[in-house]
Length: 381
Image 1 (cartoon, rainbow, N blue to C red):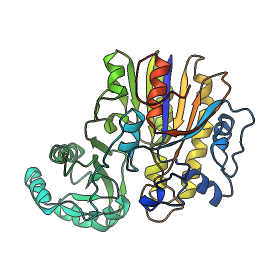
Image 2 (image 1 turned 30 degrees about the vertical axis):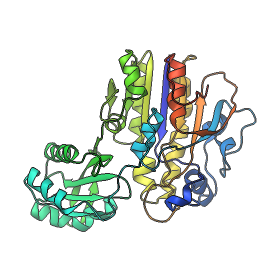
Image 3 (image 1 turned 180 degrees about the horizontal axis):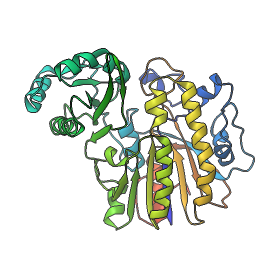
Image 4 (image 1 turned 120 degrees about the vertical axis):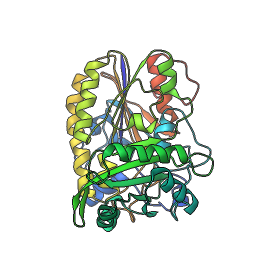
């Protein structure tokens, strides 16, 4: 008996009542991608009921959906990875993680530079792919790491792998993580952003590593306390700072993440498998590449058909997202959106889950399925 939750990072489905407060009115990731692409081909999720959740060009409403289907509104303020995943496991934030639209305070940067024994360059909000090309040559020349942030609650350190070795970069990030603590400087994540290349032509590598704040007690920690396997695929371990994750594997891209989710099914006889597929967000959402995003969704759906055949009759699959990142929308940031939720078991008759009041219903569903008492959220099975 396995519960599997696959998060299609940033694959939102549009309207939330407070969208306008975030400047995101009209953002609707999957539907807008389908609209500008003259349709999208997602036959396996269509059968489950994706087209019953909202109108998506090319995805018909299923007459007899094979999964329970609906959308979830986020209870927590924010629109980032940490907030979304934490809420899925039962933690609702009262206050959003702090953001740094003007960069980090000068006194903090000074202390950080002293701690790592190097000066830094940058310290402003930027697209990661842009800033490494803007400041990469200076970094290579001086050896000083590039620090920057975004609209999210992040402190990011970019460094060329031949200038600052990965081990040293990760050590710098751990130093920053130890220093960036609540209440004032509690950035949700410190992220290592290694890159390669030369002469203003730099590209990021897959050796990214996230250093998150430790989450409060949640479903993962409860499952682990009860001796139930919790298996993270992708950046799950990093998002939860390892708390409550008994086994984990990293991934280099979505294809690798899907393969490792299949491998997890072979390794885990009973427990919870939690997968994050990040390409949709990192490679296509932020870069506003609607075609790339569409292709990634279609590749996932094609893989899904085979994955369903690997599931046993007593397995449960949840497919959802953690926020939006509409590639047809202005800017390069995440978008505040409702997210789809599909809850599948073999031979079930799907029902309409309507609009769920919080991502916490994912935790409630996993707990209910695994027979664990958990008082947060409402089960979707």
